[in-house]
Amino acid sequence: MKARGLSEDEVLAILHEKREQDLSYDRIFSSMCTPAHPIALKAHQLFQETNLGDPGLFPGAAELEQRAVKMIADLLGYPDAVGYLSTGGTESNIQAIRAARNAAGIRDGNVVVPRSAHFSFDKIGDLLRLEVRKADLDEELKVDLNSVERLIDEKTVALVGIAGTTEFGQVDPIDRLGDLALDRGLYLHVDAAFGGFVLPFMEKKWRWDFGVEAVSSISIDPHKMGMSTVPGGGLLFRDGRHLDMLAAFAPYLTDNRPTALTGTRSGGSAAATWAVMAHLGKEGFTRIVRRCMALTDQLVAGARAIGVEPVLEPIMNVVALKAEPSPEKVRSELMKRGWLVSITQDPRALRLILMPHATRDNIDLLLDDMAAVMRQL
Image (cartoon, rainbow, N blue to C red; front, side, top):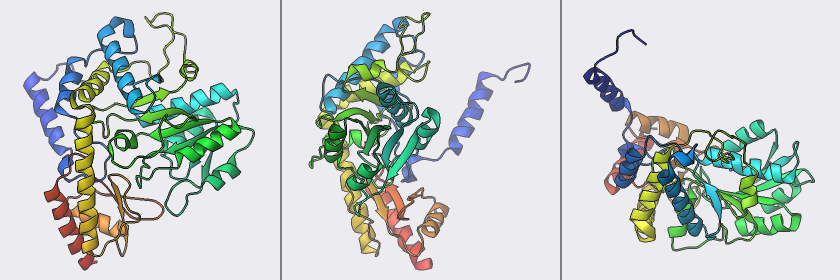
């Protein structure tokens, strides 16, 4: 820091210069985030200085958080669910498994997750000192129930299922995991960070939310398909006693038993989440999801037209393509042409996410470049 500061114009000039270095979402097909809805941006700006870490100082922001939680609870099939808005899926997953561990009273236990689980569960194992046991997947890249059952023992504190896997967009058989959880008396957490704002608005219906009796908690990210601002996650529990398991004691705060993992929490994100859900309603989100699925169908059909098959038929707006001769080489060449795509681990494939910022024209341009790259390789 210099002794004498820069002028406002100088600071803004540097900020604009650096912002221009950031990539535009227009050609990004690798991210599960998307530009926030305009009303979310307005709401966030209005509440940006509020801190939900001390909610009694900002009762308006705190009320908007609870309204948003109630809306999400209704969306997830259990209006009486309780929880809070987090920074995102990683925090939500940490807190869910922490609650399960505390409820079980086992400090050297294990948690059974699918091999397709988000990397946040590796962090959870380290932070909570739990063994993370990874169950095999079946041929459709869903968790294999027999593998899960073999990994359970007397020190298992929770089972995890995924509703919208990060790499393939697949939905685990949550109802059958639920049967297993009930039979063994285990906590069941569903990671729906991506799928939570997709599955409720699709024509086909899966049993994955609180409608499954055994589901104890669900993580869901408004800053993904919920089109809220970053950071914007959510964690909901069926039973308020699990939320209480997370409480700390802070006598100097207006709420002296906060349950969130972080201390300072943005009221702006809460306001943004409530605003976009209130503004769009279920009809608005249904239109957005249908459009994303139409773009998904366009991409798959176009890929097949140039000889590229999907790893599996997309469940939601996540596509994995068997790009030959090597997904890595195809990705590298596409990136040279300005396209941002990613790679899956097993099986190796090109991974593309059809978010609300995607357009039909850009999909056609991407496919043209993909065809050219594959001819070149």
